[in-house]
Amino acid sequence: MTNIKITAVGDGVVGKTCLLTTYVTGEFPEEYVPTVFEHYGDKITVDGIEYDMTLWDTAGQEDYERLRPLSYPGTNCFLACFCVDKNIASYDNIHMKWVPEIRHFCPDTPIVLVATKSDLRENPSIKCYSQDEGRKLKRKIKAQSYKECSALRNEGLKEVIIEAIQVVQKYKVKKRNTQCQLL
Image (cartoon, rainbow, N blue to C red):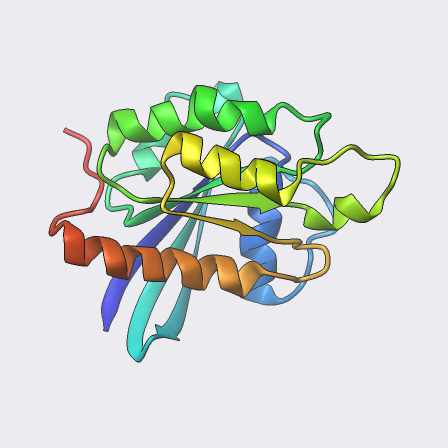
């Protein structure tokens, strides 16, 4: 069995915890509880390979900037998460804050850009980033992939996780030691 660590980063309240919790439990958490560090274990088979997977949830709030990188070592793939709601600064913070932080601590670790709360697009009173804008940001930050999901509707969550694993599979072929390490 192959071990794999996937770490979710992004601003507070973008839906990282809901994405991971709903994926693991199948149930959407009803209350918001700020995360410091959480991790979830799961087994998954992708392309015939069985993985012992650890999903790490990080705190997006500035109060945890010094602690957050302690969860990065051993990460095989990052999920850089932003909310599709344009009223939240999380989209811009991907390239202004999160990718620079990831690249500082883990320069060779692949990134999957994840748009969360895609169900908000159905509300005409909320201005949302389009899929094209998501793909444009993916190219800008040089992420390996782009996915969208809705934890509320339990849509696209498994696809996000499978995509992250497949990115790691492809990336390992190109580069041998892709794990993030703090020196």
